[in-house]
Image 1 (cartoon, rainbow, N blue to C red):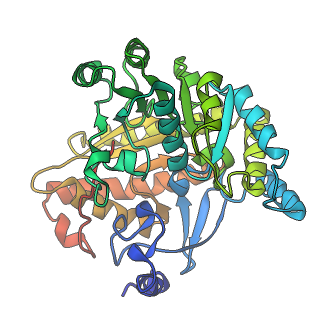
Image 2: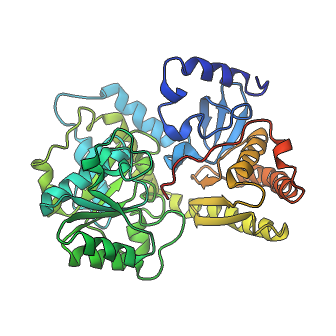
Length: 429
């Protein structure tokens, strides 16, 4: 048992007795963090820092899977939630916050004419697909990117255990920045595709004309265009990637940064499509829960009143510039690359003989975590990531990147691992 992560590992053993994987979220589980060199439980967070149950402090570069645009325990959001808590959390009739938050989303998001709320991003994407099917009278769906755990999507991935074959047969993947792959689906399923849903950007930016081409194809074939902005919304721009790239979808889904980590999601879009939300069943006991709505309203207000988006992009670009310079300095372009938007960027690790990317990534995580940086290779920026935090990140990279390069070049990487290497799971992007 690791001394640094002693209590975390004790808690993991205990949690596994009552919780499959020991976590409610796949991406927070032991499958993603190598045993013996990783924390497994976080006790508190403040700004861009978190503390694990063993008392170790980290610069948080994961940001609760990009749910935090402002940082942990942002005082303005905490104040709004605390105030609402005095009046109540959930009621037998709607609370005025429901339409106030909907109105704010409509004022910020180009496609938004009407809005409905869920609790997770998966709620929102599933709702968007259901209403698209109702609007078009069709069953099939074209997908690109990751869209949550519900049967309609996850059945199209390697994690399809438990999803009926009939459901799996209705969802078809196309490739990002490849209009021909989408054209092929429309040819294969003529007049059958209800919706085209994609993340408008994830690892790589859209090529010139790609998003416009997707929209044109969808509309030419009578399908609804849905942007899954669960991550890009309220992060790439106040109005999301659709504002940044100037392409307006029919529907969009939001979550994560909408309320700086509070559990609320949204489907927003054209009024004529959204009106069918009165006919389909998209209904939640906690859909109007007021603490999350108060957090959402305060978050969007802060995005309007402060240079949140601009700061996130500026600080994120510093990370990309640093990494690109460091990779070049180390002549390590065969091992590392960078990708993504400044607000949500990636240090990509390649297979380099004789090592797999997973073996290299395991050593990377082992050493970054030991130096007080919580990361698995992403930089999910928040308004709280100031220059002091970036200095700590860069200091860790200054030591870890050369260490990794030397381990690969000298072929002694496995000897430096104090744990079993991570295993590949399933790829969604």
